[in-house]
Image 1 (cartoon, rainbow, N blue to C red):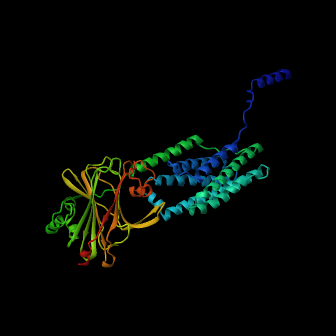
Image 2: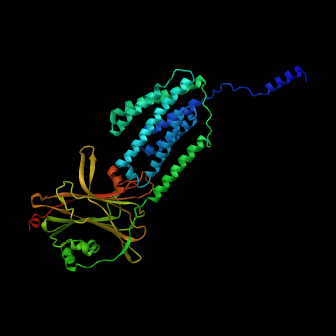
Length: 477
């Protein structure tokens, strides 16, 4: 083969090469990586508290933030630090998402849980700082003046956002903060375009899984874990034990019946509980039937609210409830009593706070304790401000089997001659859970405190306000 033949062969081979695509955009590795970082920062920084978006969007933003830094981790030690921090935030926020589907959600709302949130916020701030320093170093390597004002502005912006969010700032201040955030993210994205035009390529960073697979697998695992936890923790434990009806204290029981104490409630009380009513002077009963108005409150739940006045200014109260037919769903229940809105009575801490759940199964009577405690609850109203009341909350689940479901709680109050109220109000609230698929995990009472909606499809409630009076003559004797 001579030189002429060799040149001809080269010409023919070159003609067979594919032509360069007309109009095709040049590769933009920086734009793609920082696009994910920008969206990750956006979705994890400001959330929308509607339709569970406050949980869905940060979960998606965390994985996008991780993927963005994964592509940049070979560029500098600052991006390597950002990659590690993004992985930590991804795992931590995923763990919080799962914990919110368990009773640990109660812990997350405490002071210790807020410390965890503060730790995550500080880690995120360090991530912003690493991004800013990493971009500054890359611009210098490319021989261009750093265009990192937006990245540095995000560090300052987040530094200001942290104390504002901890202080609960909101209202008109939200809009300028949001506008500044959008402008800074837009500037950060423009910085990526400047790097692409400069021709500074990203060093290859091999990854075992594609970005699409990482997103699908991570979100799929989170979804499966959340559903599993919601199902596993859909009920409170029921400490069931066999029981038998007690018929002692015959004379005292007869006296109480003659004074109007409901027989079906009295038959459920133990002899020890009946003995607490020794010397009863008056019995006042408020009853609420099982059939409320259409489309209002829980259907099929009857209640008795009973006041028993005792010697020395003592008063004993019973709240008894009964299902006229077993509910279809036996998940979590909540019962709360506010003994007196006006705080006129003195709480008798020496009197035991009692409660039992009763049901029948295969001819056997079963029982489970209803455990509550003396506490307080603060209610906030748009028009009346905040008010703090004493309350007795009880959390329990109905047995999965059995019929004739009923229960009662009993507590003691005290009154002195100098402070005898003529009338006072007591409120009872029973909340029943209809569906286990409710995120985040919360007690029925917590849901009611936030919504005050008796006809809620997941946590319907039955609540009523009753007025009691005390007998002055009985207290003076």
